[in-house]
Each structure stands twice: as structure tokens, then as C-alpha cells.
Image 1 (tube, rainbow, N blue to C red):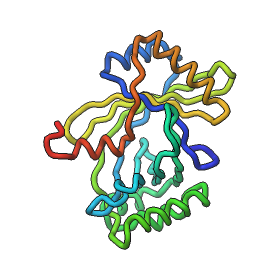
Image 2: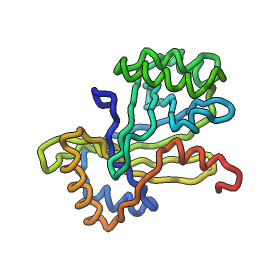
Image 3: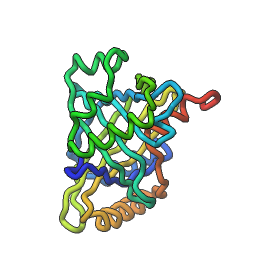
Image 4: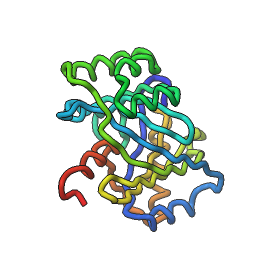
Length: 219
């Protein structure tokens, strides 16, 4: 998470595991692997989703993170959203996942504080007094690679394999960058895709794809 509370990343959908393999073949060999479990929260009638707000509990290996994201800031290939996040204990995570603890007060203690408090207020306003409860979620396997951009900055590229509720397997590329490195990252990523023969396809958020997978007839 960026120190200013704004998540900035390039997000691209991959067609299948074949495209992912072509990209992996061009990346540095040193990689990390995270196994993630994602649980989303909303009111029963989806008020947070309607306001384009995301509240999520994620398990990464043995670590639990409570994260909130605001609506997209502007348009373009580089996705930007307000983001606040905090680690929570396994005991609190169990209560949040079971719906026996309210995630909104827990979010207010996330970092950075000013973004956490702003997103907490927006979530409370969107919920309008309705309880915010766990909806369900999906599992994700993330391979992350540290790369050097042409400008000399370091960035983290992630390749995600998500298994959605309808059984669909989705592949995605994410490249999180600092503002000053955005142009360099765009050029580097364009070159990587060209060498792999992978066309750029803009990706929707995981939350919106999760919601789509839950609709009748989604599969």
C-alpha cells in the first residue's frame, strides 16, 4: 500500500494460463507466492457496491488484512483509488468472517489514518444504518516478482489466478507503481506484453468480477 493512501496500479486481464506462462517466461526467476482468501462485506442490498466502495478481509498465507478502497479516481490505463489497510489478529478475523464483529469500526484504525477515517465515513453513509456483513468471497493464488523499471525505480508485478464462485478461473496482471514512475512503468509493461504476444485488456476490479460471478447464469 502506498504511503499517501492512494493505490496506483496497472490492471490487465489475461485470456488464460497460456498467456500467463508466456509472460512468466520473460520475468526474473526470483518470485514469491501468496495464497489468498478474500471475503467481501456489504449490506444485504449491496449499498457499498452501488457506491463503488470495497471493504474486504484478505488472508495472505498466515496474515489477515482488512482493506477498504474508494471509487476509481479518474480514468485511464493506470487505476487509482483511495486505500486504507490494517493487519488484524486471527481471532478478530474469525469474528469478521463469521459476521459476529462489525468491520466498519475496525477499519477506522487502519492506515493511513486520514484515508481510513474518510473511507469509514463514506462506508457508513453508503450503508445508511444497514448492517455491513460478510457476503462471501473467492480464493486467489498470487505470484509476485520484483522488477526494475527503465527509470531505475523498483516495482512489484503480480500474476493472479483467481477461482470465482461460478467455478471460472481468471488470470490477471497487476503492476503497482509510484506516481513518479508511472510513465516508465507504462512503457516497460507495453514492451513486456509485446514480447509475450499478449494484447492489453483493461481489467475490472476483483470485487466487480466477484459480483458478476454470483449472478444467476454467470457460468
